[in-house]
Every structure is written in structure tokens, then in C-alpha cells.
Image (cartoon, rainbow, N blue to C red; front, side, top):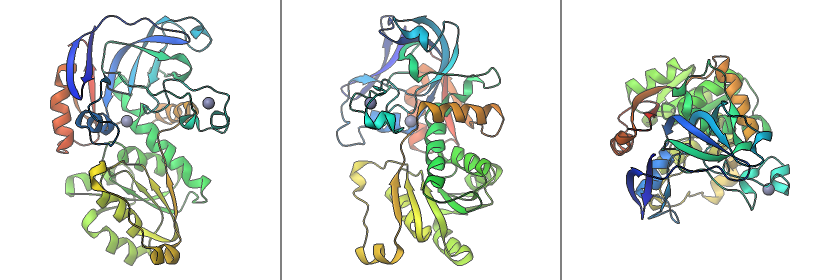
Length: 343
Ligand SMILES: [Zn+2]
Ligand SMILES: [Zn+2]
């Protein structure tokens, strides 16, 4: 079968042997796989400790279960149409019994394993992490598995930190692969969304997604502070330190800062002046991916037509290197999907 892999950090597309599903695993024939910014970061060695990798790549997909390993029939059946990936981190295995698993944070489970390698024809996956999808959700919705789920997890944390529906929240990087979901999800939850991005085309797109206001990054700090006195929460999807700085600049006092984007390590650290910290008193959290329950809830929202993936680039597996270049240069809006894995 065809598969894209990283070998010592180099992206190769090659013929691999057909995998067999292990204990509690299902084998999924991939119909479509989304291209996430994290895949690009991994392929380019942008993150400390994740350089020159040898591994599979890709972590958001939709497919059909074609075989089951021992014990998997409790969680999936042959013929199930499923979404898989769970945002990569944690979707490969979790123990289900430790303090983190039982408190709804399986990502921190000591035994947790990620999912990497959905850019291939057949992928074996921990069957417990699969979520069945209805026919009304097309194959091009594969990016819901990471982009959508990550946005959903971040928006869901707002109310946990006392930012309730009706309040003003900023989405930084609102036209991007994750941000465009966050605008739709936060709007569906009843938040008043200020979308921040760059350029007229991207800002028009943000407004079309339901944001009550779309503002250019260069003017956002001034406009938001002047007109609203700041936002209750900033959701930062931008994978750049400039986006992080802007997230802090938009917050009102005692606001909630939710980091989601993961800038390259070479961009350095978040700087926080202690006196400003004292004055502004923000709550700062990181939100990574989501759980299998979050995925089920998001699938329900998508089935109800409240959230859609905006896919503006499609291609066969052999296009993956070109798609990475286009993603790095922000050449398309929303998300890209590989919809022919065998070519
Ligand atoms: Zn655990
Ligand atoms: Zn991802």
C-alpha cells in the first residue's frame, strides 16, 4: 500500500507492507486525510525534541473499518464509517484507569500514545478512539479530527473558566485551519466572536463564518481596546509569537488567555512583565486537542450543520510535498485534504 513517511526528517512516499491490526485495534481503509499545520511543523523539524523524525505522518482521517484485531469488536464493527485521529496526541492509546484518564485528561496518561501515519491507504488504530459518523458528514470533513476537535476543546474550556455564552471572545488566526472552526463553534455556543486575521479576503471569510466583527491583526489591539475595552477571552490559534502577543494585548483585566497554536521553538518564549501580570491578572491556559467524547459532540454539531470544514485544496497523496509548501506560504484558506491515498 502507498504511505507517506518521515525518514530521518525527510518526507518520502513509498510502498509499505499491508498492516495487520493488533490487540483492540481496527484496520481502517482511509478515504480522506486532512493536512494539519502540525504535520508541516513535524516535517520541517520546527519543534525542539521533534527533529529528524522517523515515523508515519498525518493524524486526521475518515475511513471504513475493514478488519478487527483481538478484542476490538467491543468498540467497532467491520463496515463502520469512522473519523479517527483525535488530534494526534493521545488518540493511539490511553489506559482508562489512571488519575488523568479518569479526570477526562487522557492526553496526560503515562501510557498514552499518539496517532501518526494517516497519510496511507490502510491504518491500524486503537478501536476505542474511533467515532462513527453519519452519511451526512462527507469525506472532506476529515479535518474535523484534529483542526475541528482542537478548536472544539478550546471553546469548551471557556465556560469551565467562567467565560459564559454571550461574552466577547477574540479568535486570533480566525481564517486558518483551526481558527475557522473556532469561529463557527464559538458562534454556535452563543459567544460574540471578534475574528482577527490578515488581509481583506481572509477577513471577509471570517465574517462569513459568523463572527460579529473581523479585524486585521495590525489594527486589532487598538480597535478592540477602544470599542470594547478588551475581550473576556483570547483564543490564540496563530502559530507565531506575534499572535500570542496580540492575544494578551486584546484581553480585558482578569481575562482568559487560551493558547492553542504552537509556534516554532526558534521564536523563543512568552514574555510576561510581572507588574503587568499583577495589573491585568489574566488566567493563562493551554488547550490541546480533545477527548473521544469531545469528538462525538463535535460530530453531532457537524451533523446538525452548525460546523463545516472549509476545504480549498484537495489532491492525491503524491501532492503532499506541494501542499506543505502552499501551507507554509498561507496560499489557501481553511484546510487541505488528501482524497486519493493510493496515488
Ligand atoms: Zn491513563
Ligand atoms: Zn493536527
